[in-house]
Image (tube, rainbow, N blue to C red; front, top):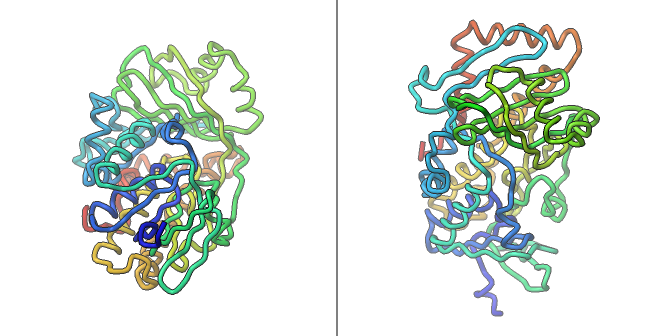
Length: 400
């Protein structure tokens, strides 16, 4: 293979939810660029994600802009059964609760909850239409930079050349190690069950977040009579729950949550995964940068993880809109400066929620009750929380 055949403007390590959106965004606005995704998994494994995604309003707007949302809607008709029109927040240790309503902010929905696989399928279809290249069962085994590009050695020994390398290979990023990026991990000593709950009646487009001293429990609308379930707790508690029969797990879920959302008739458990906060010492270097979970992995409380990764992509696309050299140092430095405030705000927000709302400490319990009471009484704070849920209140790209 000659060098020109293996030369790209952008190579993306990881063809998942963030990597595919990055490829699509850059290829859409710069059609003449050669954009390649490298995916370590086989093609049939790349879309076998059992998770559900809580998509903020701003994320949905981005997916619409790039022609992805239409594909999601086609797979989930009617999409309205997946809309979050109300968010109910409560604490198991006290009587206080808060409700946020979309119509109060002149919105049809605060966000949507959709299967990750539906978004992934729609993203990959849109990428194919735009001419994005993808290679499965392929990863980068070594790399080095020269004056104009990064030289990538693949697992089959082939070499590629790229002006910009994007690492979008998730929380357990292989690229972080190759790039020499140092990570700092905080273990929350919690494990989360991802699953689904079927209801006896409609969820009426409510999303619920119920805090307990061991961790939060979230129910998110995922169909007319179905919730996506995220149940966080201590490793010991989650191990016990995962060992229960389906009938006993259903009983435990109903007892933990109560009757506010109605009667649970069926429960499914897909996976359990440990929870941690991961941040990096740097996310930009010479002709490379980290995006999404490879750069920042958050606790699932408040459902901010993928939405933060989408804002990474939007900010990068904005910086590269008119770039002649996508890996130019001044452009990547500008990108890094634009993302720092958002990272700090979201990391502080989610980490603070975990420590305040997942503790049996007396002071923390008092803070929870006081915080919910204050949120219930203060409309300004309610608006700020609602804007955070919708992905607003941070740097706005030109599309918004």
